[in-house]
Length: 253
Ligand code: IP8
Image 1 (spheres, rainbow, N blue to C red):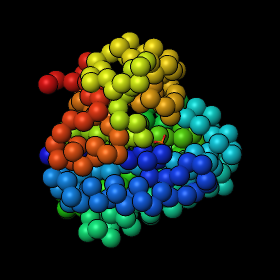
Image 2: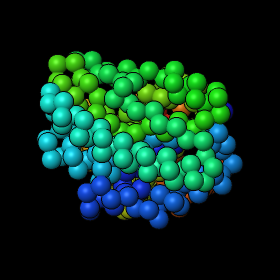
Image 3: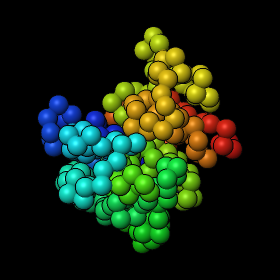
Image 4: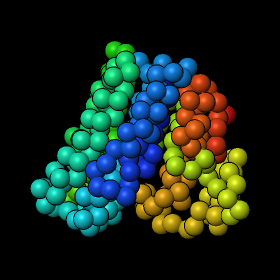
């Protein structure tokens, strides 16, 4: 039984100030991970987003999921910032007894010219097998013909759900789910058209483009994915399906 949990960067950082962890929110998330019914030792993979760490440096240098850089110092600057956030997440989990270990995507992933992502998952699988809790993060990734581009945590979640035997996927976000035009949580999304108007049209390659990009990425998965707010994190880890369930055509239920 493997669960992949994404902690949104906006959930665990203060996006209004560069490189600022939201210590209370991170502590609450880490506490939920230890208290939930999902065993973080060997059954849980955590992925976190960039928040005020990665996005701040990426924006400063004009690097995005589609606009690359061939400047190694810029790549390292973004990657190092994500390393600092990753260390904060590992500390918050480790202090609470979670056997959390880093897996850093820059060294495990690559993108082809057509943006197809390859993510080596042997380290993640082996860490799970030995009772650890792998913690990955949105990162920079070397991209054929473009230098290096931004790899979102959502894409990593999708790559993990495709290559590992994953039972449950959850995205903990700052909103309680995918919202309709009236601001109410949509219970289930099976086609992008169901929510296109409410989440706004987005280019399919714009994976860091808010809820639209998130929904598109999740609709491709072979397992259903829940999108929920931080108040529902514990419930998700206890086995509930809070917020919105995104279940695309590849899901066999
Ligand atoms: O917050 C972005 O990850 P996301 C990672 O999951 C960087 O989109 C480096 C900006």
